[in-house]
Structure formats: structure tokens, C-alpha cells
Image 1 (tube, rainbow, N blue to C red):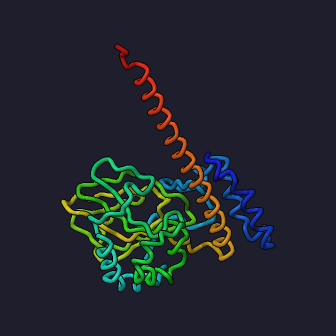
Image 2 (image 1 turned 120 degrees about the vertical axis):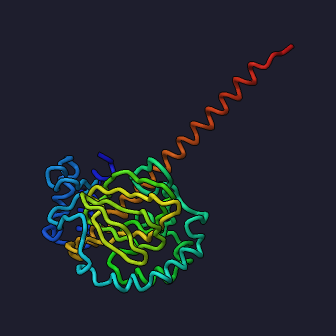
Image 3 (image 1 turned 90 degrees about the vertical axis):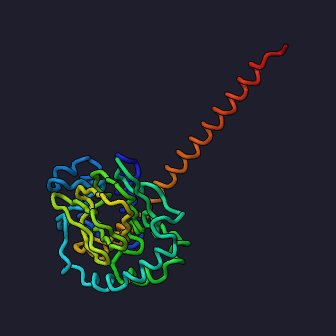
Length: 282
């Protein structure tokens, strides 16, 4: 279990004390943190669902019906403007993308992202370049900052292998921007194809995988939203926890990166020293 997850109860207590929140209002968050810390999530979820951080008592279905999200039509009407901003950033071939942006591995082809938010952290340059995208996402609960938000690009002949998302407190939306024939996603047991300029919502804490069997790239706007069963106070508490966890993850990442860089430098220096001492003197 990651140490940042184990810090959850202490962080939640500190936050609830600071804002004088009744513990009963956060009962299922406390319960979920305990279940998560004890490694008992598989006992509480249906087959195919396996989040890293679990909140009990939330509706659990792989695919969600459109009727639950009245904002989908407005988002889809903004698809041409969003696509134009994506293309202005470079589209499917542009620079500034990050390879393999999530926990799923790619066993063929390529997967990359151009982030607007990365684990809730805003990417200011891309946000400034996409004002109409930001405006379209603004009315959607959690779309701007509760989790991930990025342009997801699956290259030609790509397979993103089966994986599960971070938490069942989020749902995930895809808005199709560039979709050649031969692209599909499986969530749970059901496979669906994208239709250009349309959107759907699924629970990414269920196992899912993606195929692009075409000879051109596929692009969608991908973003997380809060699970609609969460209360306002639960969202606020989870937002705090995820912000703390994000900072801890970043510190761990950069500490590891710095240690690796230092070790590599020491190794190079040692190798150079050996080389200097081994130079023949005559």
C-alpha cells in the first residue's frame, strides 16, 4: 500500500477539524479509507471493478446512461470549437505531448496526452491556449480539476491494455474529436465505438482497454467528473485529500528522479575516474 494512501485518515481528520465538519457527514469516506488501507477493496466491489482508493455506497456500473448528465449536449455542441483548439496546439502530431499518460500499458502502437489538468494540477500554458474548451468544461462538476483532463491521442495500430482507474469517486467522460474507423473501447464486458463529436460517460475504476486498429490517430478530450452520488461535503473533503496526495506523489516522484539522476552522475564520475587511472603511462 502506498504511504500517501495510508496518510488519508490523518489528513481527513485534520481537514474536518479545521472546518468543524461532523464526522457523520463523512462516514463513508472514513469507511472507504479503512477498507483501502486494509487491502479489502476486492471484497466490496463487483467483478471487474478495482479502484486504488475506494468509497463505499456509490452506484457501480461500467457504463452510464446519457440521461444522468444533462450537460452532455452542451459539451457536444462545443466539439467543433474544442477540436479547433486541439488542432491549434498541434493536433495528433503536435509537440508537447506526454507518452503513456496513465496506468495502462501499451503493447503496440503509441499513446500520448496533452494535459489541461494532471491529477488535479493545472497546466497553465495549455489552459491559456484552450479558452473555449475551458468554457465548455466549466459547468461540469469536477471537470476542471477533480482529477485528469487531457487530450488523449492513440496512434495508429495501438492497443492500450486492460487497466483500472484511480478511484470510484470519479467517473470519466470522453468527447470524440478525431475518430477514424476501427477504434473501440471496452469497459467491463461491453465494447463501444466512438462517434465523432459525441460523448459518453463510464466508470474507469472498472477494467477497460482501448484499440485503434486504423492507420491514423484517434483523439478524444478525456476528463474526470465527480461521481453524482457524492454529497457536496464529500466532494470538498475528497478534493482536499486528492490535493494532499498529489503533492505527496509529486514529492516522491521528484525525489526518486533526483536520486536516480544523482546515482547516474556518480556512476559516470566513477567510470571516468577509473578510466583516468587506467590510462597507460608509457
